Length: 518
Image 1 (cartoon, helix red, strand yellow):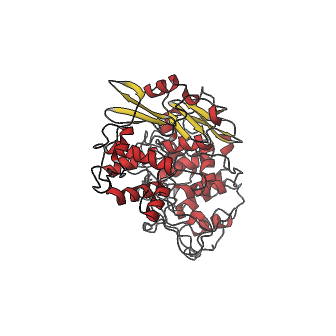
Image 2 (spheres, one colour):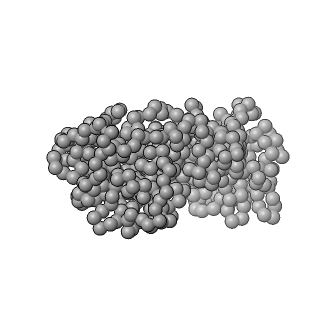
Image 3 (cartoon, one colour):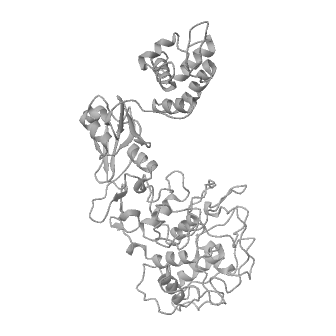
């Protein structure tokens, strides 16, 4: 069992509201915000939820105290005392919690507590089950996880969550998320344990063991299996309460009773190198390989790795939930100027050292026009931004110019038409030029000082004119005959002037601050 010193506070990403139980849970848990307690957290899965802990459970709750006796073949002896200050001897599930600690599955909090009444979060459950299964070696196996909200280097328990997915124990939500900070409901726990046992053959009864769980309901088979094994017998009132979050104490009892009856059988679910289908949206599949996770659009398609800058762009776009969907070919490098491309169901993502990674809808009119101009090897070069559309036009910026499409004129080389206030137009045009962050701040400050972004600003003493205060204003006619009245023409001229003379907006701003002009 590994030990980490602290856990990052993460934003709740679990789905909210009611959702049909399609993949993982019958109702997604509402987002649970987290705060990191003071001091060092011994094991990061012990981060508390900000919400108040539920009321103490009765002995009959969830996993009743009067559980079936352990099988005679089980030699395990239940401890009679535990290490946690908030789990006194005699408390419900105190012995099971002590077993959980002695087994190395948890060490509690740095203040000596276990906090038995707090709900188990989904990322913590992944860590519990991974350790319960013997902490199988998994390592840093993928540049991208199956879930868009489980990110290497950012998500706590990234390896454990991806292990849980690769074994088939979890399938996530239909939108491609895992919701690591959502609470685990009781029906979800039943599905977890059923899959952990290797999804054993079991015929669910026609008559439910619980009055609030009916045939046809999400996870009915798994809940019935859980009851048939004696791992859970529900509440005294005959209910199972499938949508109620599992507390940490209940989780300890569930795992203890599972341990009495079964051995984790994850290798039979999704062994390495097997294609796993049905877990991802839109019919996608993934495969666990030594290099990481490879993805395909379905059982008949070859899995492909998506990595590096192209993988990052695919991830940012939303992966299989974006217009790109799944990869169809491996990354192909050796293009003009040292570039690479990878094909997806809905388009291609190109990368070069000078342009970065950007996508093209291969079936769009803009893409056809670009290919007619020589693609990345032509004068237009690589894309430097995504295709964007308004009610009247679509456009995409390339290294050598912009392609514009309208219904009446088709695709052609042209200038994008911007809308908004002068400042908004300036920010959009600066971003298209690559001036964001500090560069945009410098440009905004420069022209705020020069003209307050007034495209009609005229200096009667110097003849300077417009937003950039061109001297004389007629210089801007190189960018359009409407230079006197069109802020976009003025901004385009000003950006080109600054680029040619100073190289960056901040260099021009520094000159203005030092000399009073630029």
